[in-house]
Image (tube, rainbow, N blue to C red; front, top):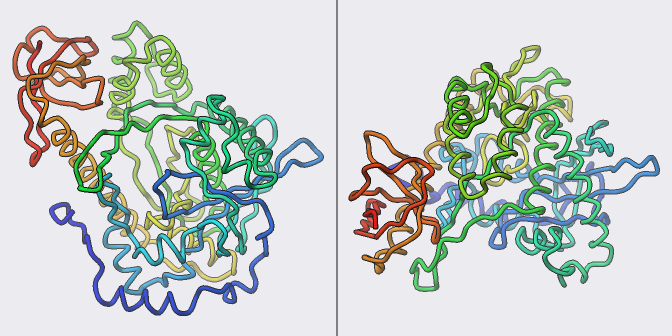
Length: 473
């Protein structure tokens, strides 16, 4: 963390402010103008271990056949004043860093996992985005307002995903809350409509392998858990995209500057065309997100084993997401991967500084007050958030490599089924199937081609550097 320019700890000034915040703000008196929506059947879906809960969801069927969808986002700004010591520390790191072994939170734990976390059975302040979703996936009549809300259940992606995917019966945690089963089924249906609408407009579905180190009580790495995409993850993704689009449009309509999350039209589209040609497919010569989305869907069906590697190659050619400032009246770049023109980050203010900044812009606009940030100030924040997010990814990637090397260090000489993931002048690389670990093929690599299945033998590991070396078996 330190090598990557992060501050891993909180200074004395931050801790003093946390004490003050903890003492004064457990009641909702400061939100006296907020709508009282605590009786609605709110719930959260997140990782099993997550404690920094940013969002709650609620859906209600309407007589017209449409669905009234509410997304509640934790009002972090109510506890973290602009320019405070806590705020300055948050701006320093810009993001929480999840290494699997340890989480380096952007905000002190007393805030991120308690006062500003939408934990179950506690009254909390939130900024609510309300929209009406039709069966064709169009979302209209968005309203944004402060509210007091209360979560009735903390749910996990794994448990709810398996149930919604038809793999398990209704979970006890769902049955224990009256009405929650019907509520979640309505949310699932609504999210599906939103997702299908975006797919029709060219939203890209990728499938890279994401693994997280799992450690026992003594700190020993015992496995690499692979994140499986499921209906619960899709539900939250579709809802959060909808909320982020609504927030961006709200700020644009109010005529105030905003922080946008953009993925530009790919500079390296020609490389994506080449990738498609390598598997016998043809893409247009000019960037076309719908054509790319349809190509990826066909490949996922035809060759699911190699789809993660195809996805990774496409991701590298698309280029990273970044933050930029959109001033009133300007045309935005949009988000090529999501096929939307207006997109911000607003749904995770506990763990992303850009989202906290957006929340302040939204709250000022709601109160008809001047924006709390000027254009040049926002541009510096956008630049910093982009740079820090890239640094966080490098820390997380390095820690995954370190964890993988630790996991395999007692298996020298063992053989594994593998897929070749890279061949260049820099070397030949392969990923073993189980556990999903990448390494360099140091012996017998001649003649190997990307995408080829092979068998490798583990030669050595270097946990400190995160190096893993294989030989062709």
